[in-house]
Image (cartoon, rainbow, N blue to C red):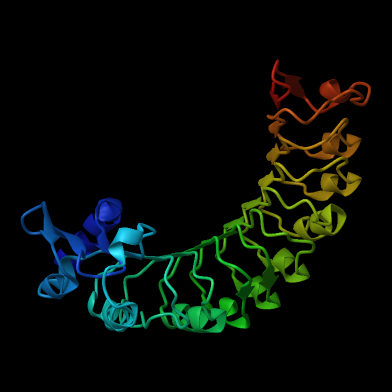
Length: 319
């Protein structure tokens, strides 16, 4: 019972709890939550935090761009950083892990962090993605993965073994490879592939039966016809975001995504909408926010057939 209470507490407060390590490590600051006394504790070093590791639920490790911090020998600092990364597994109750802007190649061991649910990485341009997904795969409770601003991201075949994954976000990568094993993620509900220069989706995404929302913000080269053909197989999909993609025309086969409720197509180059949208019985909103869409030639009786009301800003909402 006590353990359950701890887990509940950590889920409600983890966003307040951080461990921040500057690149030179001498300015390290640690913040953890004391469950027994219901107060935040502050530590100056990881070493001190390790005296009460069970009270640490969120860990954020980041370098700093301030050149003043680079006062010490970089090689020596890198060795210290490696030792600190090796200590991550000692925080047994860790719920959230963030690693930002470090020159690491191999992802640290997190296999002993059995309550870890969220992993966020950003600006890790040297990261070996097979190493990353191999470590993630060892943890059976990972539900949220966020990858931002990393070059050449590769979702390896090991993605298919992260059975509890609920949300996957990969944004601002200049190149993204997606392995077909993504189709094995039966619990995946939310997918975001923003600004990744995507051209095609793997057909196996159509096998993700619980997929509810998918976002493709700013992917101007995405083959929409192929994308809609695949997404039409996702029977629980209710939201698609195609904003800022330079889209001039939506393919008619968007009308095959039968459970679609919300369609975000703002900041594109659309002048009209396909009549097949009228065939979507659950469609509640078409969001056209932005300056680039100029709806000059909507189909005759479109607004009547689709059972939506056009607002002043151009958006359509359910009557």
